[in-house]
View: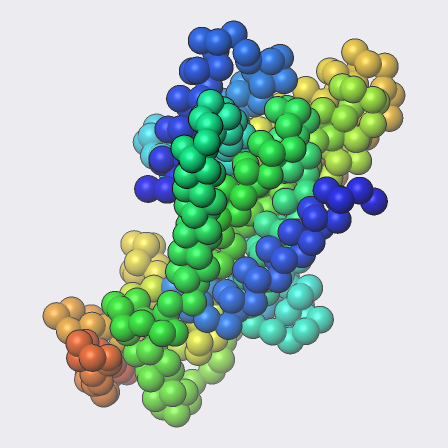
Length: 237
Length: 231
């Protein structure tokens, strides 16, 4: 491993650890998104109450991760949300740095951009409030890094697969961007004759979207990714 | 504020690079990616909110962080144009800014435990109220049914708490009295923790009051005369 890789992983672990520890120990979460929604959902997931663990507006992935954490360690729902959100932020460090270095072709720019991302209060604020938005940073960075790798070397398909999967299953407002990202990946994989990419991208999108649509269908009877689409379709039909 | 400053610097750097004809193909791709992401998220909100155009910065944060590369390029370009003591001063200023902003972010997480502010007073009053409610509440930990609406998530946990922010209901593993109209018509709060000057809902009696901090912020804990039961 080169020096940058070691520094990056140390930075990732440090970020996740520091933000998670300080948030859990010192920060009383007033934000209703976490305290009144994600935390009760996580605790419901941990006790196996599926009906209360999910909701058509909130996708599935975050509840599964936080609920599993509550089930494994017996922590509170809010603590689980803060830890998962901090881990998302920590993990985002690595692909984000690589994307910046690849685009700007300068290590210094990549390090300063990463430092800005980590120090500004808005991003760390999302993590300490136990929100899902840090997961979106991770997903977008992963997809971008995978996409750039595919353009150069016919590699990076698993990063794109994971990025699209996380986006579709994490937050419903990521659905349209994730669909466009998936379509772009398939187009460029076809252009580069990268058949694994052509095959895996729609599979990843379909699996994540099916899980979300199935959940929404079980509550509303509509096989769509979110309630917003129901009112839109009702207007069309 | 910090975010806005960073973004202004990023856009200035983009404009500068376009003027210098230094933008690479990959940079254009990244810029288009950010724009498409912001547009699609906004479009979904526009459709979902039935034509209301609302802007929530948090929803665009993941795309906007990709612009920080240009901010970094701008800072490095400026520093590279300087020499001698000015260069040293510029590097020190950037380093100091990063340390100060990072420190502020970390301090923002911890300060609730150490300083006397509105927020820390709310947190301490919630801890005070949580003890009293735990002793007082003899009802179920959860309702048998759950009020479900597509528009909002409502858990089945009890007691139902009306408070500023959802910290107190979370301490009690209770449910936050949502202010959305659909749930308001359906259920009533069991307890309410309110600061001085706020009137409690009807049919609630004062249970206890306290003063928090050096500024003696007053909080009142109310209890429902009759606890709400599922219809």
